[in-house]
Image 1: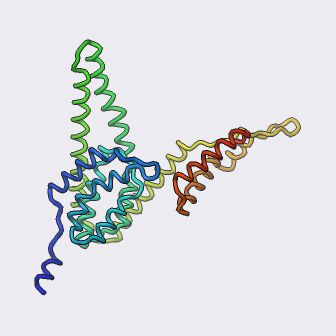
Image 2: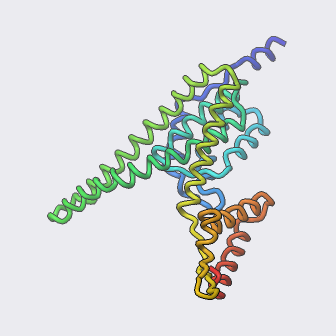
Length: 278
């Protein structure tokens, strides 16, 4: 009886080795297996395997559930975004020990943070650091130095590794400190609700910026010309884009395969283009 109680009260704790393995898998393979349907989901799930195996070593069903919840859609910039697997590792650890964390909170945290961190990471990593490192390397190469490409690789590689380590470790330590202070589940629910709203807002902004469907149709009645697109814009700017996105969303809700949706969209686009509707 005492042995059973002792086993039940033993705290499950991640080791430094688990965290290092999680980070290295994330940093090296997070973008090596992308898909149109879930993008970096498999990379994220792969990175979480050392965490899951440690926390649920004796519970196969819990391991399966954990792997499944990390196969949801995920996409971010993998260096600044390393904050997320670090944070999720601390949340998984808390949930495995009977804390106030549940699956919904973990999913909402991922959805809420992946967009903002992707925006920051892409801007700084691709737009600033990579550009500066390339400028230094190209300038050295143009001056005849064979070290130009090597210097670029060193500068950029050091930045990527240092930033990844920093954000991942901060995600884990910050997550532990926050989770240890939040004892009211209602507070955590409010936080995850806020992050969900942020994620949906970013998704809406991405739709508005990247989905642009218009029609060239126009009719002439007497001396006036009616431009259908202007008419639609007066109802709702980007109405055709919204209709297309909602149609895709409803198809996904009905478990229609992404490949089938892509084929249908391709056929509709070609046919409508040929007859002059789009």
